[in-house]
Image 1 (cartoon, rainbow, N blue to C red):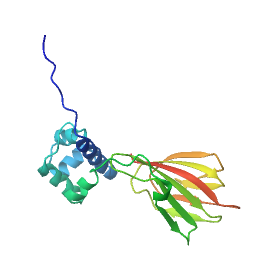
Image 2: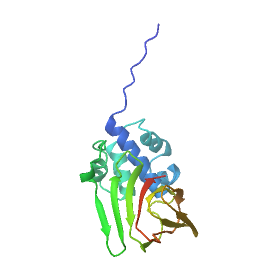
Image 3: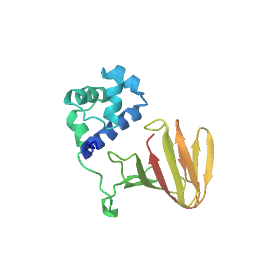
Image 4: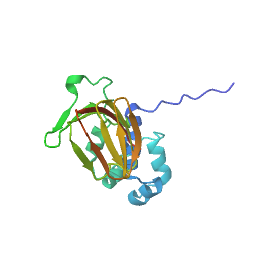
Length: 194
């Protein structure tokens, strides 16, 4: 009988690094070929690194860091540890734009190795916020109205949402979030990177 070779499981840091490298490329909308042209690293090597089939060398990471505009220590700090499983209410960052009547709570913030995040948004009656475009083209969003009324405009189409309604979309251009009143609106926003 032949022996079965023990195949070592990939190192958890290598797995997170692979996921982060794939995420950085996806954020820019580059194909493996485009990244290969920009970095001087072959497509097959890039593909293997993004699938954690190989542990990237310092030289490879240096080339990729140069293309992505970050230092190696920045890249490695993004993947050093697993994201926490539980984000306690007291640890959730809250940001407020009082002038616009907008409060944003980062319920489940972005983390290396995870492609989604969960945000709680609150708009006061009459609030109207326009965004020029997504941070990442093709960003997936799910907007679930918890209470109140929210009007969301995407690609020149206005969606009127009431409590319990959920709008699912990929964002390619300008969007607008408006609370027509009479009361405030509270909604959950799930953001998933492409």
